[in-house]
Amino acid sequence: MVLSTRAQPGFGFGIGAPGTFDQWTYAAKDVLTKIKGSHTMKMGGEVTRLLFVDEAPWNARPTYYFNNLWDFLNDAPAAEQATFNPQSGIPTDFRKDTRSNLYAFFFQDNLKVRSNLTITMGLRWEYFGPISEKNGHLAVAELGTGANLLTGARFEWVATSMRRKKQTSAHS
Image (cartoon, rainbow, N blue to C red; front, side):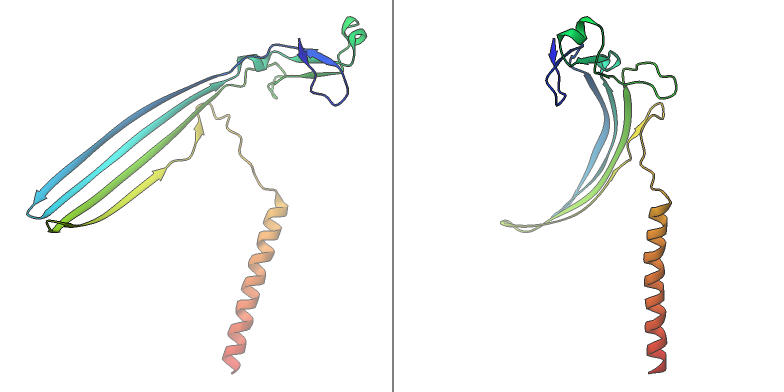
């Protein structure tokens, strides 16, 4: 039996269990080293594919909350909590299959000036790709028309003030 999390006293029951989180990482990387005199040059890269499976199988089973024992005996829950598919209304296990790609490349040059002094120079580029979902079930926040109105107002104000500055400097 699970205690109710509602503000009023009561109790509830339902199945609560740990979820499953699996991660697969596929990576390929390589480094090429070239030594020429006092220079040691290295270049390389890495490509990584990340796959995540996150599921909460217990989430498809509802949890019921009762205000008192009498409500429980009358099968009259005060509240029910579960995850439902918004298209069908059927309880769902809320599984997410997310994916991401990572890319990195580098070049490094070590120059040994003296036996006790080495100068190291390098450049690295990394790209962390966006997270996507295998079945297209990733939620995306979309701003409404009010955001466009405010953005347009801000842009218009900047453009108007820039025109005024140009006009004022042209008349001076």
